Image (tube, rainbow, N blue to C red; front, side):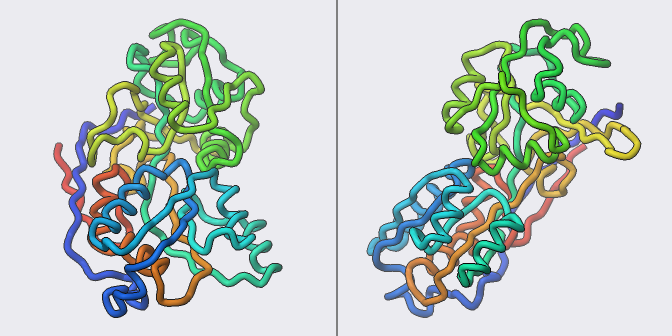
Length: 313
């Protein structure tokens, strides 16, 4: 098992041009920055979208952005049903969802907004600092139920019955974690389902034997400063062919940016609205330089503006 090298990566946003030039809302400010808009938002990444909406309305005082926060599958279904014309989701559309839009003859455009990391979190009193995909699979499928039974360096580091918490089924991080960390295996029926990220944070804080997973957006205080009321673990992937365990990598913006952190996902803006109006103005703002500064501050990684990664040994 290889330990991750002791390095710190610092991200800074470089001044760049807005890539969504076809939707430059400054050209027609009267229609792209005024009025009222309701956007469907994936609960897992809602903190950063709330910051985006707040700043947009501060800069454009004649606008009002309402955010309806639901699970990923719910807001994708709402977009398909015409409830919203714009949504922000923590994963790409599945093949099945794409086919539904096609069958319903709904045209949409999709823009990557940010890159997110899924943190595996434990109570700060737990001395365990790292887990690999094999261990995560045994824990979350219910095969392993006591902390003392971990392998290698983790064996007998801590003891106590593991209390497992998971995101609810319709959440994007539920499916991504299941696919990547569990190789598609089912969660144990004894795992406690959290209906919101707020509940997940509370459960991990209050249970010394707890473990769960959550979006980077929910445990970031500012930039690369994390909420110390929970502890994110270093994670190592496992080669499905050889069984080799990779480097243990910490939850950090730099490692999400260079894609060495194993549990990363993309955040997308999806809209069925092609007219020049407030929907386009808000979408354009989120992927502009100012909007991407908010992404960086919220702990996620900007994707439409150039970033500089500074490596400190």
